[in-house]
Length: 206
Image (tube, rainbow, N blue to C red; front, side, top):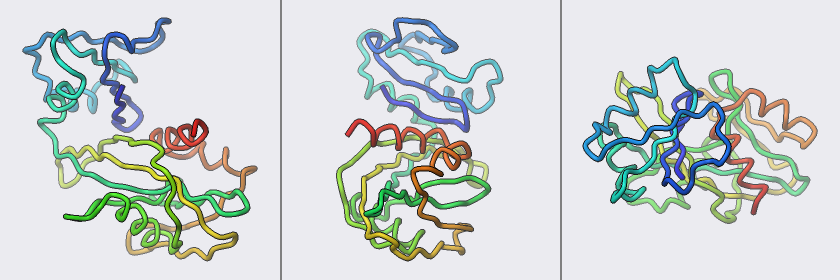
C-alpha cells in the first residue's frame, strides 16, 4: 500500500487483499481500467466529502502501474531526510511555517539519495549526522507556482553526538531547530504533518 497525503487528506493506493476487514471512515474506489486516473490527485485536493480514499487496483493492473497512472498528471520530486537521534535519546526537529517538521530536501541531479539525506540534514539544521537504515518513504503534495507537485521522501534513521550544536537554515524559512526530549515529543507531534507521524511510527517497528 502506498499513501499520498494531500494536506490532511490521504489517498491509499492498494491491492484488493490490502483492504481493511473492518470498515471505518475510508471511502473505497474500485475504478475501471479506463478511468481517468490522472484526475484523482486534483480530486483529492478539492473534495470536502472524505478524508481518506482507498483506490483499489483493477484486475490485471499492478499497484506500480496504478501509481504511475495516478501520478501521470503531476510533477514528482524525489527528496530525502533524516530522523536524527542524539546519544541522549533526543530527536532533532525543525520549526517552519508554524509547524514542527524533520529536516529534508530535494535530491540534486546525479546525487545518491543517501547523500541527499545527509546533506539536507546538515544544511537545514547544522547537524553532521551519521547514516542508519532506511525507515520509510513518504509521499505528500503541495502547490508551487500554481502547479500540483507530489514529493517522494526517503527517510533514514540518523545518529548524532549528545548536545550537537544546531543552526537553523533561516534563508529557507526555518525559525527554530531543537533537540526534543522524549517527554516533549508528543507536544511537538501534535503540531506536525501526517507524513512526519508516519516516519516516527515506522521507527518504532525497526
